[in-house]
Image (cartoon, rainbow, N blue to C red; front, top):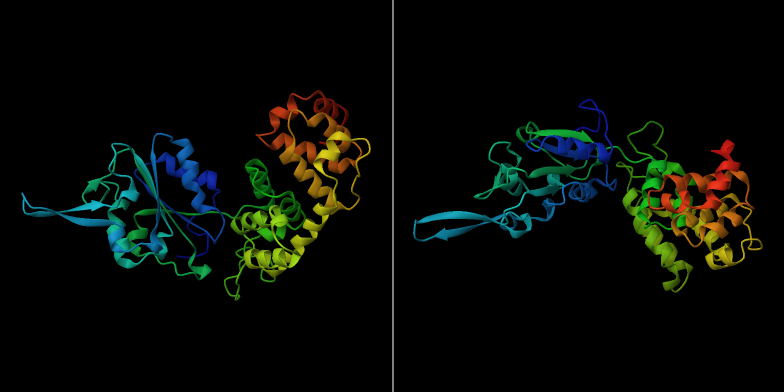
Length: 358
């Protein structure tokens, strides 16, 4: 497999999902560098097809016995192959099967799974898939150097899609909608968008944050590892000291990312509490550094609700215009917060008074 895009343009995860859903008989393999969210596609498809069973198959960690096992039919003096329960084929329901990291699997395991790639009578063992079922695969690029291999006869049965790494802006939008990422991490990514660059792009050989296949890296920043780092930031009060947080971050996203991220953690610790902001919007401390303002704005987007948006709009009105606009734009883009904003008189009045900032 090649890291070059000559076999097709890159797609987002949402576009990849639409390709899979458009043609159930076709088999799609999603290729991309590590940690960009390919495995999350199963959940996305499950939401689109709620009546389907979901089967996550971790191919590299499978042995032959994890696919199908022989069962002897003594009456007919034959042997049948029954699939493992993890494939969810025993119920009379369609299934969505994700063969995760198929390109890293052992050859005998790939051979057993290969009948799932057929468009005519796809099966596992002696069980045929429900006709409304879907099967898709994931893998890394060969240039990633993480042991991926796909035989030519398998590749010819597949539609290969190169999944693009999300930009910093795309990832921040996703993270705000998820509500799972700490504001300090959001502010850091906003300030340092290079942390989500791809090594495939020109000018990234010296990027100290990201996955570099030719470097000896123990950890690096990716959409996946940034979420993991965020959990340490959010739960740092449970750690004994700053050294423990530093070590955890370095071991998750690498030293360069960890060191720069910690500056934004420090900003967060200097901010007024949410309670103080809401109860005293006219007198609560207003941060002066851009980093602290960014952390506060992203934190507010995740916390705002019907009861707090009015006092917060009074508080944010004391900030420079660019931070007021940053809050308004991110709230308006967040589907979980749009109703809160658009039903608030305080927010609507701000928009009317500041249309030139948007």
